[in-house]
Length: 84
Image (cartoon, rainbow, N blue to C red; front, side, top):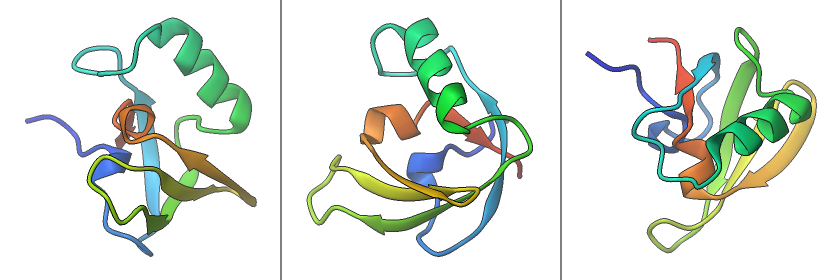
């Protein structure tokens, strides 16, 4: 069974990051994306929360990781696996 991803997370629920996944991720250039996400603080065991979602399907998510807030594309959030 695969772990849930950040784009599947319910808003206002704090979770822990398990890993940045490489398979089944729709974003192009995953190595580059994983490095960028890690540089922003999306690293294993860090707390993360979806604060808001765009009103259209597949739109951006407003996400808090640690004390920082970012907007992520749905495809970028799909690359972040969460602990069950």
